[in-house]
Image (cartoon, rainbow, N blue to C red; front, top):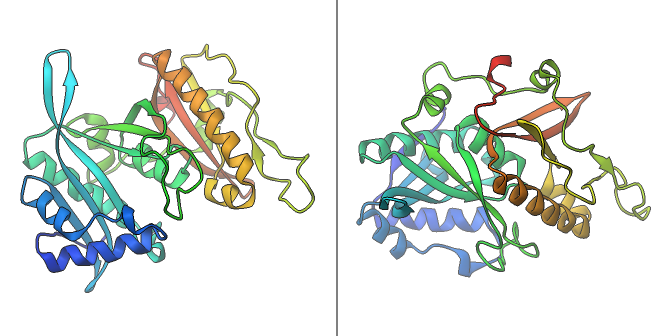
Length: 299
């Protein structure tokens, strides 16, 4: 994190840099770019735009603004974190974590305790950052949240999203963002707990020879959800799978839609995410909990 400088952005010149960065992160659809005048309006009305810089080059940004959420006691203020992007050359560099940590600090100073945002639940990199590293939780699945998207990363699939909840004053979040952060879960924790994934990750062995027969395929049906702790595995690299076999990517979208909607209706909550390697192969698993069950005792 020391490689990056995180700055609060406020000027038209700085917002123009954010405009250009969006084009690098989400290529192919100019209509999806948030323009400079909108970014200026956000920061002049209680919102935040933070930039990550390496020397004088912007390499990432996060954009959020105040909002309201419905509760049984009436409307309640929150911070809506709408966009975060990191230049493709700097992914997995820690810039995203540094931006979110800065956002956490700024929003706490505004007197708010809740931040929400959405992400594609099939993207392991995003899940690992949001759930495992930052300590968000999720019990909300939104079908086709943004309609038909046209950019190079999202085109062609329903824009289903998790909406995550970041309760920024909780011990859970403090343990992840403090000076001595809580280690992320590994496959060894699963082994020690005795838990098994809900379903095996079978491969598409009946694919045509031209396609990659090692690609994982989803089960035909959602299995019974009858344990206090569940492990739901997803493809470790969904974008690679989508590029190799688009119809298989659609199968994963609709299977995970049914899985998470069923789990959330049964009052499960996504509380952790595991990204680890087994015999050199990456694996990605969501941890869903019911009640007070947790894997923390195995950390």
